[in-house]
Length: 340
Ligand code: NAP
Image (cartoon, rainbow, N blue to C red; front, top):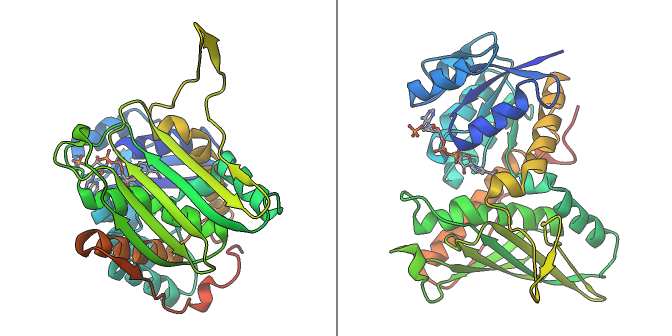
């Protein structure tokens, strides 16, 4: 069966995902798009063989021809679209963050629990990145013994004019929040955000930030969040264990040695660094939705927990100090693996 997908928000990542969903990666095609910028929606639909631009995201979700929904609009707009898709009983892939407060994410969890079925997948694509999967495989296979410390860096080339200090946590470090829970198989018990000397390249922005996480089993994690490094886009993770260390390798495919120096290319941005992860993520999501099965990837509960931790980190950023995190009980719907 071909999965007929509607995409809400056709900016940068919306257009990336459309490219993958429309005839590229498997049994899906894009039949509808909607965007606050209706000219952009019309232009994107015009470039696709089967897509129609609809006046609003709500119209798109309600349209019978749409089997499943992708939400790639700006974070503050996610909640109503995801809730409407759940109410319509349609699978929905929502880019991170699921919503911008834990209360909003909690409403999505409540709606899914009331529906009695998992319909939501959140775009935490690191779980699909082959390098991150190899890191987890090494750790789970006992290659370095029990993990003790983790050192991460999330470095963006530049930040757009609307980018705020809070977005360094809620929009950027939220990837590490999900990655750590997945990689280490533990919840995050406490967080503290430190503000080092400010980079002159970030204008008035407090950049970089240093985020310290305490995992429930005592593993300590430091994450550098820098959003104006200018030399490219770089994601680092090194885990120090009882018997060794494991780290993400340099993603450059080749190293050039000449004139007494060795150099490899640094990816320009997330599109280049994580292209394969988006391919795998969307292929799995579309195949699973087309088969009428529940999503296999990170779901509404993962989006909610990430937001609880993000909110705690923002509390630390605003007021200082260490913030302990108390998580509510997980509803039965989210126990065990997702699937049919
Ligand atoms: P973007 O380029 O600004 O695109 C967002 C699009 O949504 C714009 O066309 C925007 O129109 C439109 N929009 C805004 N409000 C809307 C509404 N209420 N209904 C429908 N459309 C609306 O942003 P982006 O970089 O693609 O990011 C979109 C989402 O993806 C964000 O949540 C972001 O965090 C996430 N993201 C995830 C990754 C990842 O690696 N997983 C990477 C990048 C982005 P206007 O321009 O007119 O406002």
